Image 1 (cartoon, rainbow over the protein chains, first blue to last red):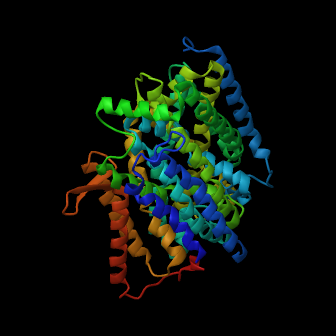
Image 2 (spheres, each protein chain N blue to C red):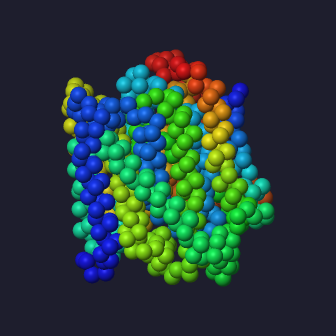
Amino acid sequence: MVRLLLLLPFIGLMIVPFYNIREPHLFGFPFFYWYQLAWVPLTSLLTYIVYRSVRRAD
Amino acid sequence: MLTDVDSAAFAVFLALFILVTGMGFVASRWRKPETLAHLDEWGLGGRKFGTWITWFLVGGDFYTAYTVIAVPALVYAVGAYGFFALPYTIIVYPFVFAVMPVLWKVAKERGYVTAGDVVRGAYGSRGLELAVAATGVLATMPYIALQLIGMEVAIKALGLHGEVPLVLAFLVLALYTYSSGLRAPALIAFVKDIMIYIVVIAAIAIVPSKLGGYGAIFTAADAAFAAKGSGGILLSPAQIVPYASLALGSALAAFMYPHTLTGIFASSGGNTIRKNAMLLPAYTLLLGLLALLGYMGHAAGLKLASNNDVVPELFKTLFPSWFAGFAFAAIAIGALVPAAVMSIGAANLFTRNFWKVWVDPKVTPAGEAKVAKITSMLVKVGALLAILLMPTQFALDLQLLGGLWILQTLPALVFGLYLNWFSSTALLAGWAVGLAGGSWLAWSDGLKPLHGIDFGAGKVAIYTGLLALALNIVVAVVVNLVVKRVPQQRLSGEAAE
């Protein structure tokens, strides 16, 4: 079931109207930009969590 | 030919180019196999690439030179919309994590080299195998041509004119790919990727300080789009569905291409691929920051003849010439890795799924390697001729259609890994209708990637490739329901376990 975490990036990035806004800014970046960039490390982290649980399955 | 060349930039460029050329030829002795005269060795590097080599190879192969030029160019031209490459190259990795280790396992156990092999193994259908293989080759050819365009932009930025440098660079590439196979781009990818990281990190660290910080860069871009009256640093309401559907469709298509699949098949195991799905997003971060160079172009007040010049001009304007030379070398070398892997992937398909099946079924492993080597040469020469003789727009249009086409192989390649339900007839019908229908839609829309659909409340534009995939799946399901009534002889989903 932990594999379902892999769906979160799809949901987070497909809900475009949610993040198609300027505020709040972070380090000069409008929300649209830093929100999507933030999904990069977040996706790696989620993948890592799933990896730890399936690694033993091989 | 050498009139406006900056000598420092040119010296750095040439030195790096000679270095990677040397590496390309030496690569045949790297992790030396008993023989290179076997497709597993020439075309897949022995299927022994561990986590780091795979990371550099797939990273170097997927984030192409053209990306480095075209993504910032699109962002420069239209703004936020050009950023779809970012969600695209994020959501691709959960997909890779879930699907590609399964595909790798099947390929390893049965000695498959290509997507065509996997499909034949799962369905025992020569027709479906040929369909998948031909789609792969056709979709890859314009992709190689695009790498040449990226290289051309870098060479031109250096001040070299004429086609001789491009032809020379490609000739060298063709020769070492011929002799070293996949080992050459795998080794060169180390240099290429490190160079690109240096270039992008320098750009995102130094350029903002020269332009007044990121806040000022976004403000300048915002003002430039407002003055132009089109584009913007946020999406317009009409761009939202195109943005999401392009990201999703591109992500699903990305690892159906022969060059990305070659990187997957060449890795040493399922966990290597899983670890890479976790580590490859580092390149996505790079790409996202690189895309911002488009806005930096506005902040720097560049006047460009072509949008594609935004990255080279930015480096020429803001950096010392030797570093600009380094950046251009990074882009040009960046074109070599994907071009090599693409030609190898296409050559593997031609050899395994056309030559061996239809021309010479008794071909030996050494014969296979020979055919593939020659094919890889021909594929590159073809791409070179296409760029030299045909309008650039032709390659761009074909590349767009190529993405749509390759996406139509997804059901045949992926569904069989999980389901034992579809028949080859159904998948072949779905592929044909998706391919033809999608191409027709794209053609009737003037070769634009989006097609407007009226859901009652006004038209919504969706990525045509995704529409074609939906059509493909619907047709496959319907045809399958019909043929299920007739007793089927199937090789019982060998790949399913």
